[in-house]
Length: 232
Image (cartoon, rainbow, N blue to C red; front, side):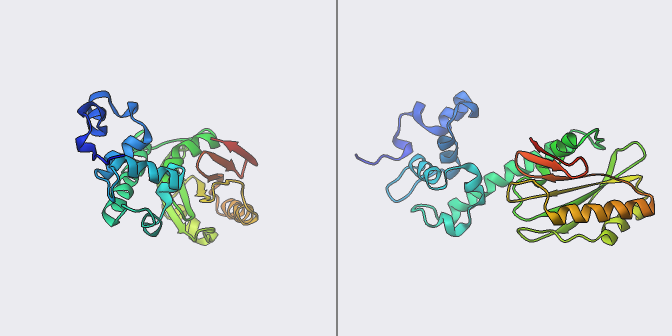
């Protein structure tokens, strides 16, 4: 079959023109990815290259997590195209975070699900564990968030002294703890449970109660204080 670039296709079949005419919702994932790539290479159109990427990585999450070296294994994917794809995913992450931040300037929570729904975008796409401490006022509204620890791929070291020094300094009435499991499994580890017990005991001693410790993953979460594992 003779190769034809997208520019040679009928105008109503070209991905960019279709998006502008019909909207992004009408487009397939391959067509949207082709628009980001702009051009193909090695005898392939941008759409051919997009389909090859989707076949190679299978899911959008795998594409997002792929390294530059993994992209280089696909003919036609040089550093410029890899950067374009990475930039598109980063914009999506920032949109999620902006939306989470703009829904309420000082959010308050009634249960662990509300904590999860608010904080999930803040952890989206992170490949290392991050441990956050949310400081609450007397009306249970968050007035400050502290990134206590950024850990390795599998752990985030936390010490009660480091956590509560911020709560004491800011005169917090209570605190919430939130951290992520990049593995996708939000079930609390033995270390998670142990540190939660120590944090709760420290909070009782200094008079700043711990309301919950929520473990977040993509689509699921667990509440250590409630002892529950939940689907998002």
